[in-house]
Length: 153
Length: 369
Image (cartoon, rainbow over all chains, first blue to last red; front, side):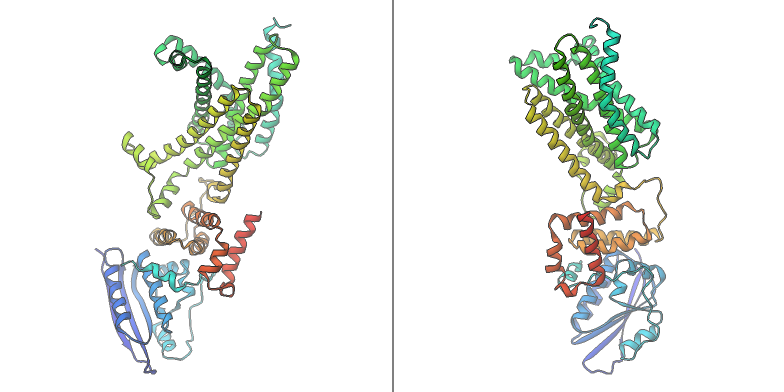
C-alpha cells in the first residue's frame, strides 16, 4: 500500500469573508489511499463556509493516479463555483506533465514557488507564474454538471 | 476447333485475363508493399479453385466427409437440394480464399495495416475468380452459342468477379482489424468492456483472451463473407439478375461503410513496425489513459478528444490513444452532437474557446472531405 499524507493549514487572508487553505500532499496518491485522502478535502469543503481558496503544495507528491486527477478537477469546480481560487505550487515535472496533458494547467495556475502562490491568494500580483508548456492547448471548460461525474467516492 | 483442348484453355485464359489485368493494374499501382508478395497472393488465390476440386476428390475417398452428398440424400426436393448445395459451395469458396490470405501473412507477416489485408484479400479473390472463369468458359465452348458465351463472360467478368472481391474484401477488413487486437482490447479494457464472444472462445479453447479476440474478429469477417456469398449463390439459382446485382451493390455499400469507419480510425492505417517512442513515462501515460477511459465512460467525448490531441503530441504513434480519439469522434458523429455540444457541454456559442472551435471546425472539415 502506497503512502500519502495530506496536511491542511490555514492561510491568513485579509478579507474576513474569505478563507484560504494550504494543502500539502506528499507521497503517492493511488487506488489504495486516494478515496480516504480525498474525503479529508471534501470534509473541508463542506465545513468551510463562504469564499474558499486552495493552494496545493505538491513538492513531495511523486505520483497521482487518474482518480486523484478527477478529484482535483471536482474540487476546482466546487471552489470556483464559490468564487475561490485553486493554485498549485512546486509540482514535480512528471506531475506537471500529466496535469498539462489532461488540460488542468489551463484551469489551475501553476507556480514554481509557494510564496508566489501565496502572494496571489493574498491579493498581490505574482511575478513568476509558470507559463503553459509549448504546444499546450486550452482545456475544454468544465461545466458544473460535468464536474459532478468525478464524485468517485 | 472445340476438340483442341490447349487452344480452348489458351483462349479462355486470354479473354479472362483482360478484366483481371485491369484490376491487377489498379492494385499493383497503389501498392506500397512488395509486388512479389502481392503476386504470390494472386497466384495462391488462383490456385484455390483447384484446391476446392481436390477437396471434392477427397470426398470420393472419404465419403463420410462428403457434405454435398449428405445434402443430396437428406433433401428430397431437387430445387431446394440444389440451392443448399450451391450455398454450401459459396461458403466453401470463402473459407478456401481466406486461407490464401492467412497463409501468405503467416509466412511473410506482410499484413501491417487494414489496407494491406484488404489488398491481399482482393487479390486472392481476383486470383480465385480468374481460375474459376477460365474453368467456366472452357466448359462452355461447343456447348452454347458464341453469344451465350459472351453473355456469361461479361456477367462473370463484371458481377461475379466484383462479387468475389467484395465478399473477400469484407473478410479482409476484419482480418486487418484483428491485427490491432492488442490496442483494441486495451482500449476496451480501459472503458470497462470485455467481449462476450471472445471470452467464450477463450474459455472453450483455453487460449488467452487476446488470442480469442483476434480469432473472433477474423471469424466474424469470414462468417459475414460466407453469409453474403451464400445469399448471392442462392439468388443465382433463380437466374434473378436484378436481385444478384442488388446483393453485390449492398455488399459494396457495406464494405464502404466499414472502410469509412476505418478511415475515421486513422490508427489502423499506421504501420505498427514504425512506431515512435513516447515522450511520457509509461507510468504517467497509464494514468492519463485510465482517465481517458473514465471520461469516455462518462460520455465526455469532447474532453477525450482534447486530451488525446495533447497526448498524441507526446506519443504520436500510440494506437490506444488514437482509438480513443476516433471512437470519441464516432460517438459525436453517431448522435450528430455538434449541435448537442453547443447546447449542452458549453453554455453558448460565445463560451467556446478558440481551441474548441478549432477542434470542432477541424472535425467538420474532415467530415466534409
